[in-house]
Length: 237
Image (cartoon, rainbow, N blue to C red):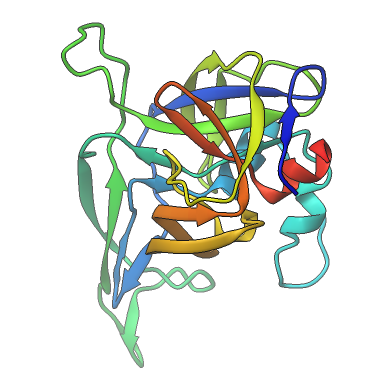
């Protein structure tokens, strides 16, 4: 279905850069008692944070991403750091959440050490030599509003600052040939065909880095090659 779709009057598109103002942790990988955080932010986490969406009451033990995203008036791509991001390892005692003890053997209350690797806080630089700190991603808003500049991210509510640049008069164009988006892609957002990719295991599922996607919709503006997520495309067609 070749053609083009204009975003003007239907939604807005922004380039965002996120700076975490505290130590940010979530379990990207966990081996033995070492839990590490990768410098990549899942787009579902960004959607929840930017919409300040939380479930006060839920039934069952499975996440309900599809139902939640249907009520959120925006959608983001995954975010990634442009440069090497500093991280800090913290050693802690693993406590039993019920007894608040550090038992490793019956009747022996001894420390059970674990480790977490946190993403260090990031702040904007005033000099132009290193302007690319932070995490870059793209955001579509469906209610014609500008996104918030401060919010909290993750289970621990890490405070984050966001800077935005709007891409005006954007239009999505269908491409039969493969294109490589300038951002990490959620495979559940792809409507076309994946030609090549580098897998990244990041809960709740896989993300694709350096992906080449054919027979799908893209927005191109300068250095930005933005893949149009399936949820966004449904609002445009």
